[in-house]
Length: 90
Image (tube, rainbow, N blue to C red):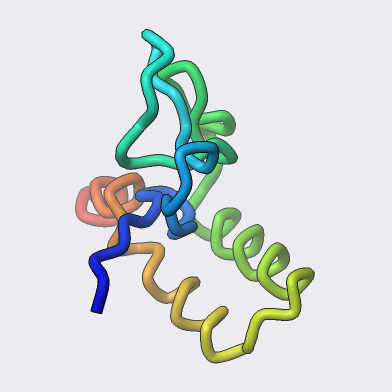
């Protein structure tokens, strides 16, 4: 089984360089996708975990992805780096 890297905000696979977000110096982020992170910052820094869950579900449904895979992706969100720090402090 290959070791995939996923965005630590939305769980999108980071399997192509063009899917990777960018750091302030223009280098590719190894943790976040281009839809979540650009120029060293989150595109939507005030987004909540519940808002991300809704967004991920909607985007995957648009792509006609199987419901089981959608549920797995959404349920994994609280374990990702961006959200883990916020859920621990609650």
